[in-house]
Image (cartoon, rainbow, N blue to C red; front, side):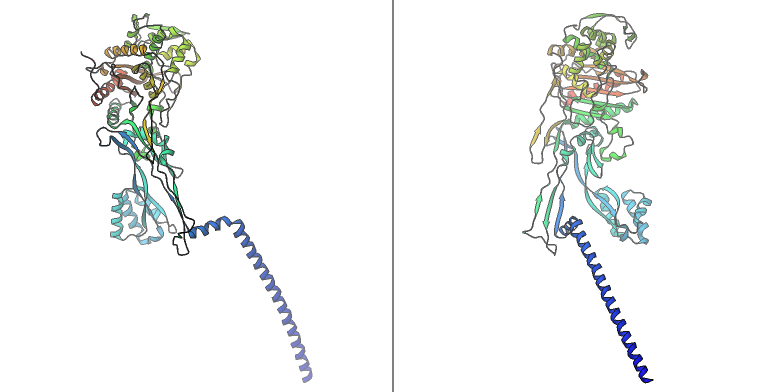
Length: 597
């Protein structure tokens, strides 16, 4: 029995040993398989890291041992002329440091969120509920609260945070654009605003010269050791930022302010839709003032409800000018030798062309009249008569030579070219209607350029607003006056100038007169086309008065345009402002009297 048991035990031990060997062999295989799988995973990961994601990890490694930072340039400034300042200049667009306030909600205890929201909202003028909503984002580490915070606001915020021990509120400095003259220069400067997540010049000079004024960013790159210290012999490089160009304008700060103030007052008193004023030196083309009403404050451009206010109507508004085009028609016929100021025709009060009837604005017949009277009484039939003497083709040429139908090229965003396509059709009816400023569109600036020919011996000067561009290294690019053409002879220019003095002395431009001065000018009361494009609205008009002072030594061409005023004629809307502004200019520019009454 015992032997059997012993024998049985041996068999059992033998079997158990076999199982152990077998199991050991399985474990080895499993371990080999496991090691193989792990090796495969490691190889795969190494392939991904070293090949597929090489660029990422290379950059990550560089970041650990390299300090790289972008150097931001300073945006160029804009200056106007100012004879009362020591430098002769006044800054109208500059830079200032403001602050961006933000929160780290994770650092603010739940019990302090309402108190923090109320305190921040009170100091920064924000809505408390909005601030609380942002502070309540538990897993957020960054929530913007307000950009453009002034130093005074920041000091008040810092004080209350310290007193009430409010964690989680921080700030960082940021650049902002400042326009010291505010509304008075907004039509010229435009503004710097956010576009595609970066600051960008928009409208006016800021838009036109954005790239030049923004400058070029630089960079700094330094290698660090394992402890974050600079390695003197490492791969270090510095590319200096290049600051933006600054602009010095032809605009005179004092003329600009006065013109804009007078315009705003006129537009408001007449309950007009809008208005524009341009003052230009006819001998050089230098713009001394340019403004629109209503205006906006570029320091708070986002407060504007209607973005149309951003447009500079002085260069962008394309409108039918009306009777201010009659001197152009008369000048063309005089220049061609077809008429003189004393040429007469019989005004029956009506002209019929191609089945259309053209009447004078007063619907009266004035009998036999000369061409000076045509301008004095602003007779439509007389302007048609003048153009008929030279023919459609020559009239079309003069329209182009006077600069209509193309941009002047002034360095401001938003300039338009107008539309003279109807005149180019060379049809009698279109030549006739355009002779008194209907059926074609121009811009106020084009009209100022055209009238500079009357004040400058027939030479039309190209308008410009930037006197010089100052580079960051001090180099200056000076703008030289440039003729835009000579559509008429000096004799014709002086003749029409004298005729325009008779206009101001006549019955329809009394408010434009100036004691002691020969003032040349012309009114224009142009009907506004209906919205459907068919015919004109009898109750709406755009009024223009344009002229220059003085005739013996012209220093300024002045245009005043008032849109849809509660006034029947340009004589009672645009002409009075022209007179007031002329009086200011002869005093400010010290223009000597040239007339003894």
